[in-house]
Length: 162
Image 1 (cartoon, one colour):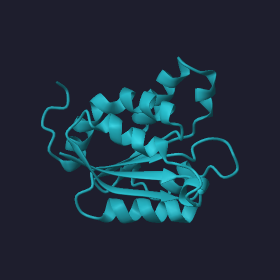
Image 2 (cartoon, helix red, strand yellow; image 1 turned 60 degrees about the vertical axis):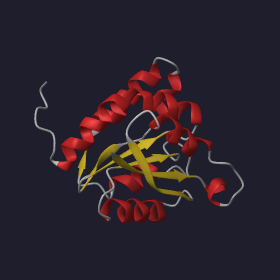
Image 3 (cartoon, helix red, strand yellow; image 1 turned 90 degrees about the vertical axis):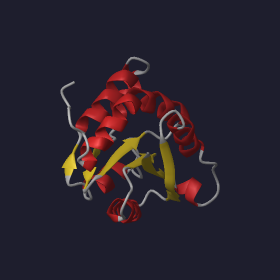
Image 4 (cartoon, helix red, strand yellow; image 1 turned 180 degrees about the vertical axis):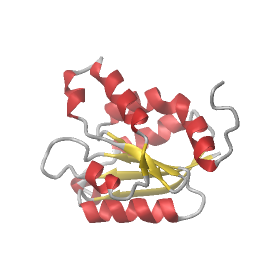
């Protein structure tokens, strides 16, 4: 069982002015694997609030994966990658590279995504785009690798080369 936190970054969503469709899309896509969403929150596009929530969740026992949605573009308020970077112990760029590569097949705007991925303690943190459509497309790319990645971070994976 993979324990998951979903963090939606949205000024309007945090004010109740916009429905969080991308966070719900994450839940739907993850229903295809043995997982449980144990944390969910919406925060504004504020670096300190994003970093605080990521740290709080990753430092609590038992959370394997945090998926963020939103704040990965080029607008002045998009600070999710910077907020994530300051809390990571190490980068895991393969997730973000794979998502961007697949997205580029669908739209040239994929190059505008600045999402990053990495690990804090034993928690994998992955930034996803903010639109529900992009979340679904990106998660489907990395979903097959997530169970093994979680096992590896937990120290449970035995044969990584098979």
